[in-house]
Amino acid sequence: MGSTARITGIAGLALAATALVAAPAAASPSHSTAGALFVQTDNVSGNAVVAYDRGVDGSLRRAGTYQTGGRGGALNGSVVDHLASQGSLAYDRAHGLLYAVNAGSNTISVFDVHGDKLTRRQQISTGGDFPVSVAVHGNLVYVLNARSGGSVQGFLRVGDLLVRVPTWHRALGLEPVTDANEFTHTPGQVAFTPDGGKLLVTTKADGNDIEVFGVDRFGGLAAKPVVNSDPDAVPFAVAFDSRGRVVVAEAGPNAAATFALGRDGKLTYLSRTPTGQAATCWIVVTDGHFYLSNAGSGTLSGYQGRPDGSLTPLGTTGTDPGTVDATVSSDGRYLYAQTGAAGVVDEYRVTRDGALTEIGSVTVPGATGGEGIVAS
Image 1 (cartoon, rainbow, N blue to C red):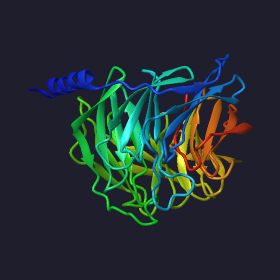
Image 2: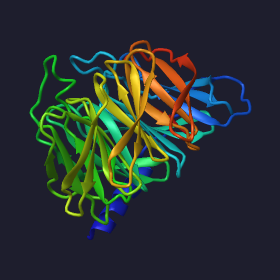
Image 3: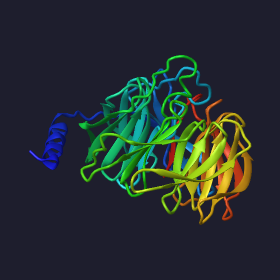
């Protein structure tokens, strides 16, 4: 039986056997909005996604809370971000699906998205220990498991469900760390390149590498990744510019670094721009502007991408304490920064030149130390 037939068979069995689970929600009456925002609490006693309506002025109003059915988790040594990762909540806009990792349960939950309302469809094992990041491209979903040396597991999306494909599992073979250094020595993100042809994994201080897997035409990964060393940089999170170059948030030098990605999976260094801040770990991009979150400083550092791949600083904007993951509205007009010290989301308007203007903030119930935020 060929690869396509095997995958189709797996999908058919999963559709026949998987039970759908709907989660109750407490939601406010609907009102006219410009979109929605979803924030993951990563609460260790019961993970949840809190939904917000986004007004035409960018302000947020809580609309409902939806249980994932699993538990959040906390890495040893973590403070404001218990997962120490980027992308623990992923939104598939094309298919109206939301994916949330349950680090304490080793599962991922799948939600249907209808405006500001969610319906939980599935909770499925990630095939590894302590999932922290999700990547989506077309009908492919890959999850990064952070503990036990790290691994990535691939899924095929069939309708509103995920089918775990056993042959799409790759162990990263990192050195397991269980002491207070765990949060810096576990992998930080899994991400598809814009064309879906490669899958990147950042290892943070466990190797200081950016690993690049080739993705075949069926969605499976190369047997081994191309390992790109980024010495002493603690590569934490990645984003891509309009030409497919990789922009990396480096927690070691507290900098934004850019690399060209070759067809062979090798990265070529282009530039490095220090933020001048502390604990530079997360990155989000909109309309050629990059914003890096500095957890130790409680700030966002803005940059303008240049044609040669270098970055021009746009300035530093203050946030609430413990700046972690961030997201931008689909129209690019508003940026939302999740801050883990008290579970606050800060709201900003993005001007044409990339400057940020503060709008306000909301406190997400039960989200202290949480990570995971996406906007529609």
